[in-house]
Length: 370
Image (tube, rainbow, N blue to C red; front, side, top):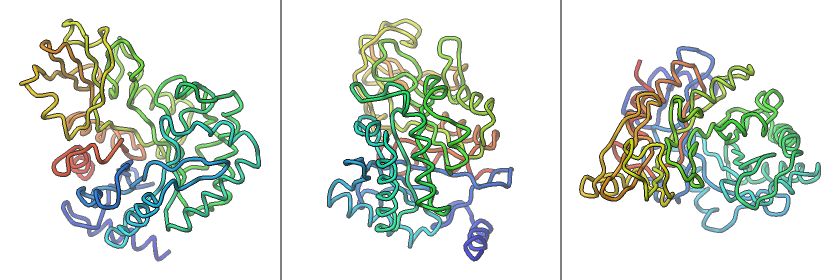
């Protein structure tokens, strides 16, 4: 009860720019809005960013070794302790770890295929969370029951095994620890990877990866993180939210994703400013490097797709196309969260941002607006 009163007090005294305090409240009084950052940096780099503008910091990644969650190196161990130490300065902050990631969950299907393996993973997770004083675990298995990273094992049984894995984690970790999972924002994942009605009641958050909807394997350009659907691109944030809402899951647990990076294609013809054209995927560019990479000197011109409410750019000089989030699009996504009474917004990832006046700041300012 004391913790509840402390949180309420923090919410009442919050003002924009105040350090160490965070209170982003929905008009729906059921839960506060969350702003979650995935983070791949170390315990020193984190000091470059406005931690007071976050509710959750998710260190990425830990991996499965055998049947257990594993801290890979002494460096990661030091980083975890440094991140958790931030909680003394930012008492509102929740520090978590994420397991897996794209290319980082090769053993997951096999490890979680047996009751013994799922039990061992849950126990090892508890041990790590307790040892480091962490607040929870995020599962980034890409993907149960459908093809993800090329060559990684997947089976139809993954769906049921994922449900039991979540069930065992909740049993072992108890009610106070946070459990979230990174969910694909595309139709195949939404329909076939997760038993939503069994899983969602057991987790705190569904982190919807509503980015990479046009990915690095695509030979046609598109908008990789659009807010709304269009005739040429049906998958979007709104499309996934409508699906999840239609199957009656708790939308207050759904956290939509923003991308702090661009995807770039070259060899793109100068038609429709490069949008929905053939091309060769070549690069991912951090938001902090946009000004130099997508500069007028390189021939780039910026455009806005009204249907998708998403930005893109094209260089006729280089025949290059870029798709990304920017300040305008993350502001719109944050407003969307508030209007739909969703759980919040998360992003990949913090070290891609500008330390000052970047995308996190745009999300934060929009989130605290009445």
